Length: 292
Figure (cartoon, rainbow, N blue to C red):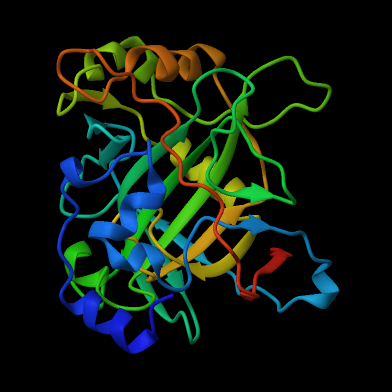
């Protein structure tokens, strides 16, 4: 395990993680090229429910949305390791949304950058990265934010607490005795096959207002802990907010993820099981409580 002094030095010497140096076939090999992946505060972890009365009270997180959500755009990208979505409201000078923490140590505003999906290989697989009391989910979506005190994502990921990631566990939309909120996919299922080859992109017009209800639900009750990026270079700079509310993902959409997304441009290697295994929690503090 790396010492903190070395971790801080590596963060300042941060470099991107070229895809040819890592994949999800052998995550244990990541540390060969990316030593931070063998460092402290690694993610994801198993989140164990704790009664509210026994855990620190989570402060209320303020979520602000840009105007122009009704006439927005979504750009999708196949990176070869995941699907990323970038949201652009009609007022393109503002980020889609911002998180504001009113007090220290998380004081400040975080700007939304991108949405990332992780999934398994077929229904019933462990597709989520985080677990809740040992339970996996079919998929997990992560909304990445960076602290505005650093100006850019590239600079923020070099600093402790420079990033905040809101994660939501997702399960296939099957018949259930208890209904779940359906996660909005903005009709991406209609054109998802256009993201089949690596480095492909799509651009669609979309009403982005469903993001408001989704985020309100996700942050009604959540687990909070300090961890890392779940892919190389594994920088331990992330404040994770993992929703305890499981949301449904349209069955057709999740089946498309299994079948239609590839790691190469020749469509020879499917992109599946793009999740990192559970990491040791090392007695990290995990807080959980419902919002007032």
